[in-house]
Amino acid sequence: MFYIKKLSKMIFSIFLIGTLSFLLLEMIPGDPASAILGVDSAPEDIELLREALGLNKSLIVRYLTWGKGVLAGDFGNSFKYSEPVVDLIIKRLPLTLEIAMISIGIVFLVSVPLSFLLYKIKNKHVKKFGDFMIGVFISVPSFWLGIIFMFVFGVILRLFSVGYNNTFASLLLPCVVIAIPNIGIITSYIRSNLEYEMREEYIKYLYVNGLKMKWLNLYILKNSILPVIPLIGIMIIDLITGIVIIEQIFSIPGIGRLLITSVVTRDIPLIQGLIFYTSVVLVLINFIIDILYSVIDPRIRGGE
Amino acid sequence: MKKKYIVLVLLLIVVVCFYQNPYAMNNDMILARPNLKNLLGCDNLGRDIFSRLVLGSFYTLLIASVSVALSVIAGTMIGSIAGYYGKALDSIITSFIEVIIAIPSILIALGVIIILKTGFISMIVAIFLIYLPRCVNMVRGLVKKERNMEYVVAAKTYGVSDLRIIFYHILPNIMKPVLISFTTGFAGAILTEAGLGYLGLGIQPPYPTWGNILNQSQSYFLSAPWFTIAPGLAIIFTVYQMNKLEKRGKRF
Image (cartoon, rainbow over all chains, first blue to last red):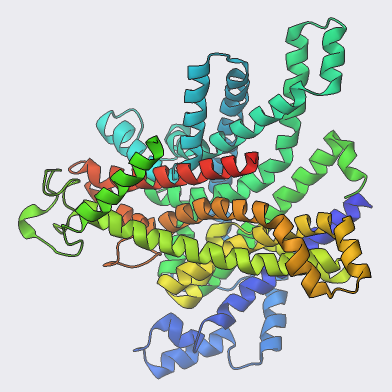
């Protein structure tokens, strides 16, 4: 029952996202064709484009043909690249997903030990400094950090290559930059979990029974990290925003650059495709995470 | 005591900055170093960066506060109706909200920008749409919890109308978390504005905002690093203080 509910929710999401991205074209004020081509273009060109977009048919007919195309994986051709939108997206999506995965990896590698360390440290000044640093991490705009890091590490110190050149090393700096705000968020989240778990009854019981501190810490840590798993889904959604901007700074040929160029050139089919595909990929990832989490922690399957 | 001094210093800064005209260009001062006359130097068109930063903070904070306030108001209305009535209406609203939350905020913002072109209104609408679903979700949860409290049941038995129960009885009780969520949204809105401004899709020059100052500054990092660093520090400072405010609000 739980899985059926989740699955139907996912299908509804995909349907709604599709409808929204279709309506995007409809909501552009005035005639979309002249809006795309510009006001001072020839009337024949506008008429041709109207024909190509199917604008001379009614809304419902257009919606149905569009929906059929989407189901077949066809979003039409991009105006700027004159290539099928799907090909353009599929070419670039893996790189963006790779960046997202590496960033999430970095977030966990850093924030789990860091939160444990901050939780264990008893020195007041160090603790205060740690809190301050986490606050700064959460507040820093990642793209600003990206500019600074690129110039400091790339141009002045020459530790990293500036821009993307197909190697893992050139992706590392952008990923670190994207990860930093999330490190702040996740670290403070795990730490408050740690403090909460510490006061739980079972820990007191185990302590009274003489369990070694090493094992106790392990239990506390495990139970504080588990609730982070459903957060990953939300984190990826937030990461995309950072990735779009960071790709622009480091000139990484991923989804983000495609998105910005398509917005600047008003390439409507490409934007529709990008919004639809990116959101659907995220919905799928969230669905998988939900299922995984319900396997790990069966309590949430029980009810709302 | 310390806080008062900080506010005083900030006020003094605002007064000092209007000593310089944020729009006046000066060809002799292009990318000038920080000096006594221009506290943070000049930008690529010879305009005083410091006064532009202060004016930019006005535009940025105006956009953030207006859009987040609108989304909190609308979100409270929708959320409380969904939470109070429950059943079919609730499940329709929540399923829509869940879908919109799953769309990355930048895609929503870019969609709005495509429709409305760049400018003040598209910025406000974009941030409004990004924070509306989160607010609805939160208020809905709170109202759902309050709905079964005794005072609501008592009011119902006296025959108080639903709207009056929602807005006179329930709303004052959930006001605190709603106001806290305003600060969270405000911090996020500043970052969103800065990101879009940096991409050149926010408010267009000559109006300065923190985002589009960063956009102009990035090509001059090597010759004028203060041009990039100053707006970033302004953003960090504001967002940090907002987050701190949120934390303090949660403690009470």
